[in-house]
Image (tube, rainbow, N blue to C red; front, top):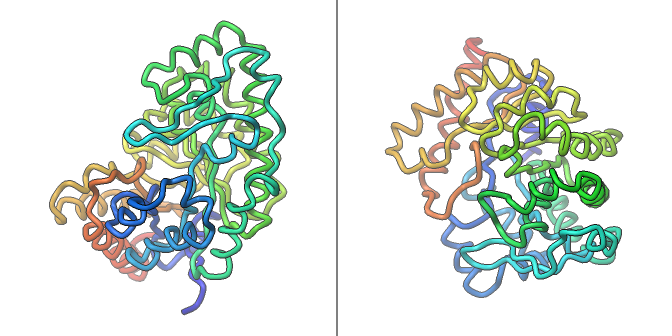
Length: 351
């Protein structure tokens, strides 16, 4: 089988013979074989075993036929290297044992040592670079989303401590965000040097901010990460998470190639807000997968018809897969996306 680069071509706005598709959280909880692995190992234990992490990463390529792999990892992985002590607690998420809430807490954070502390992640990437016949996407957490865990101490719906620090001590806030941006830029650069073919910056919870606050307190640090990666000739993706449609007009200066959309913003409107400067990725509501297959395919058809009006479209979900999702429906959806889009492009109906 030849190397499948349709995802990379779509990221760059080039001509494709079908629309590429991959799914956020495609390496994980919905897969019964993965759940068996999780009976023996925690997420972090899997991440520390490169052969096993690579195997989990490759499962959806074989089972679903998607056009890109995304590294099995967690956005919290690199923060241990800078001095954050955490666990991933079942049914809770990241729990931080030494939250960062003061200037002195920030002073104790160290520079990241990717080769020393995260060599297992780099080895997983090297294995996948040898084995995969589709591009490997690796990823990191954007500064606000990481800060929302590091400051709160655990997942939050209100982000009260995070916003209190942001509004109440803006100098301290920007120091923390700067350190997280430094960490993330170094981490993602090491991924590319190890063989990653694209990188995605997840900002899952930044939609909790008003646009002006995003612009003042967050955007400069996101821009800094992409600026420092701009010399790397690979696609760079920013996903501003759920409820982020009002933030899109502020992203037009990013040195990124692709912006991910959640399902609340129509693709055409997302492109308009982004001034056509990026390829777009998204944006099926993942819970539509609970519907009958015919309903799922009808929603996918509408997204494809809209996305294929211009070059630079990657089919994805508007957020990550949930544990109850059906592997069989995902396989059917992937096949539908490939067949429907290929037929339309071949017929000259869409770009």
